[in-house]
Length: 307
Ligand SMILES: *[C@@H]1O[C@H](CO)[C@@H](O)[C@H](O)[C@H]1NC(C)=O
Image 1: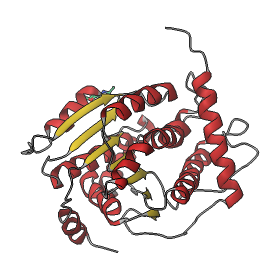
Image 2 (image 1 turned 135 degrees about the vertical axis):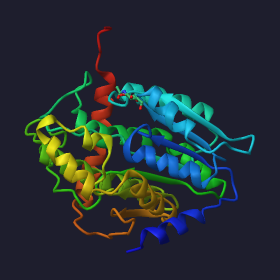
Image 3 (image 1 turned 90 degrees about the horizontal axis):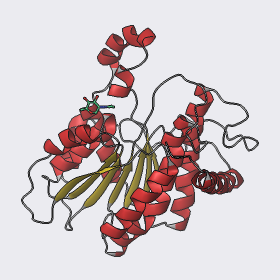
Image 4 (image 1 turned 45 degrees about the vertical axis):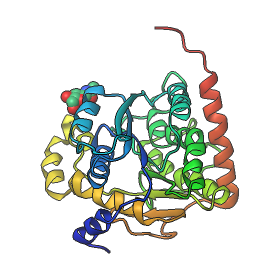
């Protein structure tokens, strides 16, 4: 288990021979934000960094905190997208595919923290499963051609989902969308397993790319600290016990930089955990893949009346 100082030193050694392009989905808050900020620091702002999220004023703050670049090609920008809806993601990825020459690092971290039961978007996808899994599936599916271009140029080409490697549960083939039976705990254990299976599928088809599923552990993010009032007393405890987003971001970047290629599951210290608490057979992997594609196509076809 590398110590924080060693992790920082390893991250500081990141010095690519190419000009990096990084996309942070969910980079306006919490761990995603801290990871984007750390990335900007280690590249001294000399990168094209795209923050995708909902909150423009938060994004403006994040971008203002980045070091001022010295290279003319550097660009720090916000792309507004409410990632609850698959059609919004489709529109955003279409413009990114037109505008960006490549993506070296695609980091996905949109999250939701509450104790509500199944809560559907206008497209009929549960919000929790949507943010933690389907939205990320859609971003990777749509942007993979840009990641491929980075690899074809001999550069880093990596996709990372900051979720919960090693915290998943078994697959229920009779209810893959969790429409028949739903509870918060089960939903919380479903997305991590689906993430493993999704990345295994991608890694099998793209063995030269890197796919990382990493668990941030318990971090004092705004999502956690803004938990329902009944849990507020826990916040004091949380602040005392939790990792800060800044320290967590170091471990997240470490996991990203240290994975050369293939699929890697990592813990809150950035260590590879192999198949620890891995669920899902090969058959389940392909069933979840087909289900994800079908469920997102179904969501895209839903007619939403204009407000
Ligand atoms: C958006 O970000 C700003 C600045 O961080 C914050 O004050 C505001 O509460 C956020 N809005 C929402 C809806 O989260």
